[in-house]
Length: 266
Ligand SMILES: [Zn+2]
Image (cartoon, rainbow, N blue to C red):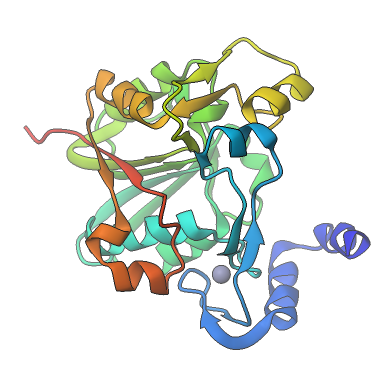
């Protein structure tokens, strides 16, 4: 399988996508992100001792989590569900910024009417399959004040040394009344945020933060606190509370909630 993966990685994304669609075809599920018919959601994540020890939601292994075609995970479907049901995406015009865009949510957003879509990443070259993506450093974002109705920024802030600068920038470029979906892996063991912004030692980062390029593990409450410091009205969206049956049907993680930052309307 490793050799097959190496081989398929050199193929253009549409070809890989088509291959996976055929390989994992089945009638059990239809991925709401990429619309593929699949046999099963597959296991994803796990393996890092520190993430299990600190009960890091979004970092522990999950069975039946990931679409084998678009690689959309439970958290990706949670964001899709929130956008559709709570943020009016597809029903009202919205300018959307998608940071570090994952392919499944990209495909879903591109199918929604009235979405003016902008994608960005610190290294846009890694995203050849995302049309028009632009490189940007979130701590000095090249967007005017109040540019976006919705910002989606998932599993990014735990990589950024000066995350408070990024929170401030996200707040600045959000329109009053707009909302930011700011998801990271977060610890639920109550032991606080562990970080070393200046670290540059992949082996040590892997050991302490669970991934070679992470600079912290957030405590969930502290994450919400940092959002509030930047000006956001921070709240947690809990999909199983909102609609248990729908959340279960989407195979969402019962332990995962989505931090939402609202910018007060003027
Ligand atoms: Zn999919």
